[in-house]
Length: 220
View 1: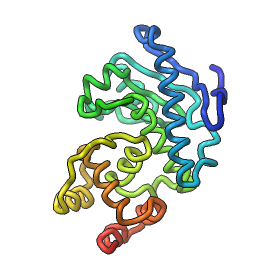
View 2: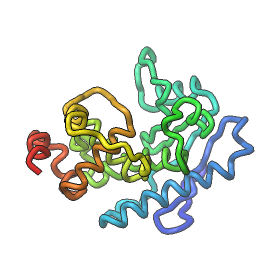
View 3: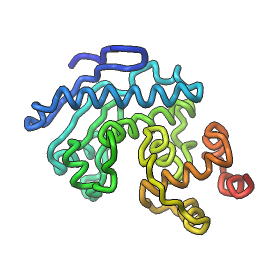
View 4: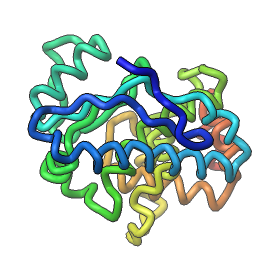
């Protein structure tokens, strides 16, 4: 398979493998891959991280029209135990420089909460954002912080749920911050944006992997 070809600064044409039924959407899906990279490049540029997007994030992408096939690909790629049940809403991942995703239609069907303008482009951008986060941390994935934080960062970077107007109260914010269980991505986005009003994104990233992150958040 061909290597990714740079088509503009920090943006690559990533070789794409599709389920047969999706071939008629190839042009649209290739454009979504390109637009997702632009989205992350432009986000990174705002904060002085553009240099971290110069190298491509993926060598290929695979998009499936069937959730079972996607789950099987995910298990192979991530070496997850076959006995692990993949949630219905789990729709994309970027691992080992491979993007795998369900189709836009399947994503909308399985995760209607995620439907918004350019939702598929943002889904792919979300996964690229996780890789950007790791590059910001010089490859130290252990420093990405708790679930709400690294998912919140990816949601913010991808521009997901920007028009989600429901504001969380202090009690629910701190319940989410203290919890290790996965919660609503919309709420993760809301919590991340709440703390962005109190501290810079760079300070938040620097502190997220530290043992006193929670205490620090309570003081800002």
